[in-house]
Amino acid sequence: MRAKEFGIYIRKLRKEKQMTIRQLELYSGVSHSYLSQLENGKKDIPSANVINKISKGLKIPSALLMQKAGYIDGVQAVDLKQERFQDLTEDEIRYLEEQLELFRRLKGKQ
Image (cartoon, rainbow, N blue to C red; front, side):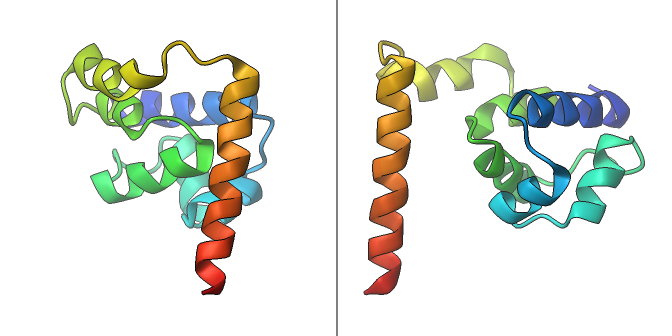
């Protein structure tokens, strides 16, 4: 996938999640200016480290973005990560995300 197509894909995912670039910056730790340049095809495919941050901000498996960026081969990596959770409902996923966020907050206060 070329850099421009990758950027368009990131924008599509961000908009599907109804996030602004500033929100994605907050959730991922990647600057809004970099994200904007990435989405507009003015940056090359990011490093694996940046991709992991963006996927965390978008709350999607990093393997999906790594695949789209061309770092890993296809469906195999995504399937392995999602295999354990494929039977969860959307409500269960939301609940687990909320519990994980609470756990992380409590852990950070220790």
